[in-house]
Length: 218
Image 1 (spheres, rainbow, N blue to C red):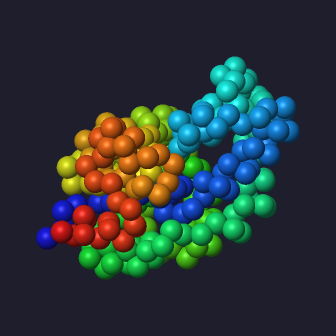
Image 2: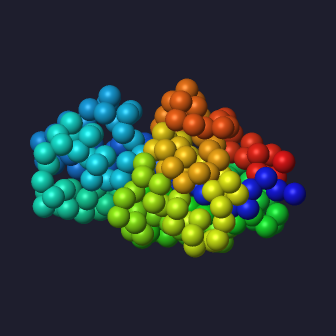
């Protein structure tokens, strides 16, 4: 018998190696507005939704909403045209998703990214067939680290927090899952360190995506 009915997976830095792409597009976009990119702020805040992330990356909390809307449009254009063709899955993702899907586990993407990007990338990477749904920043008022994305997923799929595992590479994923009462699994190959993930409640931290099979299926 499986340990969990539902697995909620972050996308960026957990399923796909997108962090270099996001940093490239962020750096190029911020330079267009006269900003450098603060590496300390990137390390601390990678994984936030774009408006909060960009204000942190630029180390300027006072960027106004109109400017931010323009920044996001510019970022998305750079990301789509220059970065997406180079994005790859982490090793073991396809095999692991296939195993979990065949075992009857409900697989969800729970991401601070937007649906159009997630739909495009999961299709291009040929993994969309493994997922029962996507719950993302488009669906909630408060993105990660708030628990709203996970809570909405639990409601939609009629499961308790104790029946769900949240998997992610950032402390914001762990905060979200913990706030929804889910078990937590960090991955060591994304944005935040194993110590940071354990410090925010990760029950497990894995070094390879394939380790997820044993955690979920027992």
